[in-house]
Image (cartoon, rainbow, N blue to C red; front, side, top):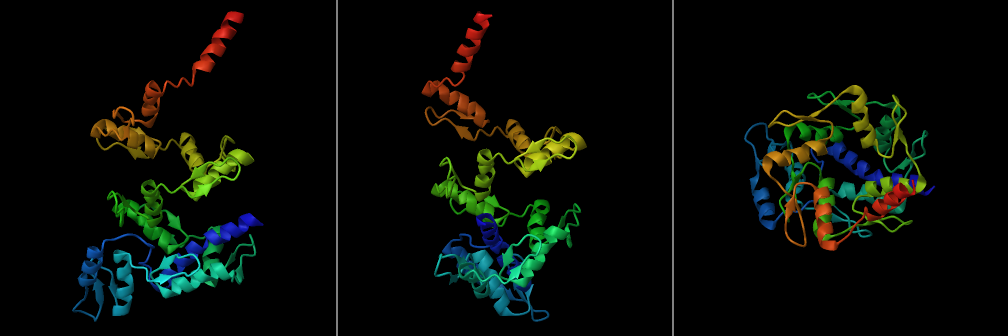
Length: 321
């Protein structure tokens, strides 16, 4: 019964996002860092327009009928989250979102899914959850036709097409299309690795990575190809595998026209054109385009010989014959 509880807690983030949708669809981010200068200048740039008594955000162009709504919206840009949970210190930009969050601590979940037993604090959240079972997808991307069961998911998806990356790391300036990705990225700077495997002690900076790792211990391989029955521990691996059957090669180099099945392969290939070498040896400072090349190089300094045992073993077997 522990797993459903964790899943229920995890879905409360979705509930909070649904709360955003219920009032204003434009609120898709949570807490992100901005400087004090940006905060004050953002407030100054929020002005009332001359037509139709609307208030328009001068940063993103979103308009509102009331100044109070614009004021709340500006917290996305300033990073202001004035409402803080006294139990876990999580902060929110709306009092209503804090009230919804508090139900996590009080365990007040009156709305239960009759199909899987997951409970929710809001009826609306249960309604959105039911779309997972029905397969219902109301929100369709006009660019690529992909469907979503939540409006906020479509909005985040649209950033793939627009290239919008509204969340910026205050330490290195790297931009992200989702606040969650920025939050995970920040752990590179802080060194935080909060998710630890209770069986082997290995730690991860993402909860999802720990979940996938646990399948090593449980032996679970939940994703199976319906064409050839090959199974995978990750849904993403199955998705990439399916391209073997469909012939899809979605990632194309804009410089030379070469195609790739994986986005990561295209990213590595692009370094040939850009000359980027992101992996640096901590011993001599030499840089490499591939992490695997750096790993092999570091062995020169450490003296490590990971394949020596195999070499000796097979040489011994050869002479036995």
